[in-house]
Figure 1 (cartoon, rainbow, N blue to C red):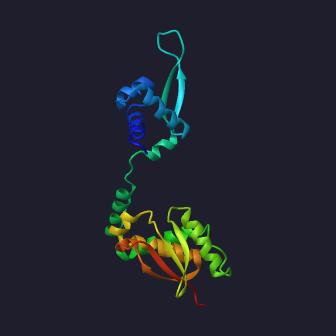
Figure 2 (spheres, helix red, strand yellow):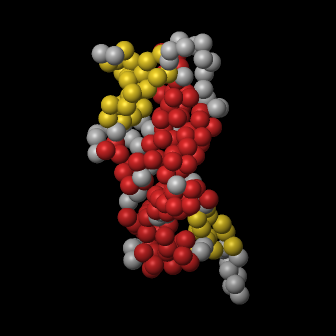
Figure 3 (cartoon, helix red, strand yellow):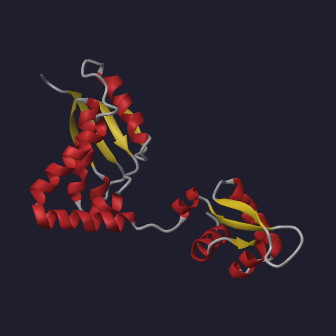
Length: 206
C-alpha cells in the first residue's frame, strides 16, 4: 500500500473517526490530495464514511471517516513473532518430540475437509492438494520429475517461523501427505534456505 494511504489508516486507528480536514493536517497532505487517497480507501472498502450533525451549528452535516473492519488487516501485525513464542513455550513445556507430533496432528486435521478419496488417481489427489494449498498462500504447482510426479511450493506462509523452528515443517508434511494419500520425499526446503519446497510424490504402497 502507498505510504499516504497507510498513514491515513494508522492515523484513524489511533484517533478514531475524523473529518477530511483533520485527516489532512494529521498526515501533512493538502486537502485535495487527502480527499483523493481517502476516496480510494473508501472504494476499496477500507474506510467508511458517515454524515453526522455538527455540534452547535446549523447547516450541512459533517462527514467523518473511520476504519472499516477489513482495514485492520492492513495495519502492522506480529503473527510470526507470536507464533514463534508459542512454539517455543510448547517445546519447553512438552519437549520437541511431542511438539512435532502435535504439529503433525494439526496438519492432518487441516486436510480433513479437502482430502479426496483414497481410490482417486494420484494425479487427481495431487491436483486437489495444489488447489487447497494455493488457497492458503502456498503458491503450489504440480510438476513432472524423473521419479514421476512432483509438488513444488514457492511460498511458505510462515517462512520466518520455519527458518527458526524447523519442526514447523512437520505440519506441512502431514498436511500434504493426508491431502495426497501418497509417499513424499522432500528434496528441497525453504526453511533450509532453498528457493522452494519440493517433494517427489509417489503412490503409497499398500
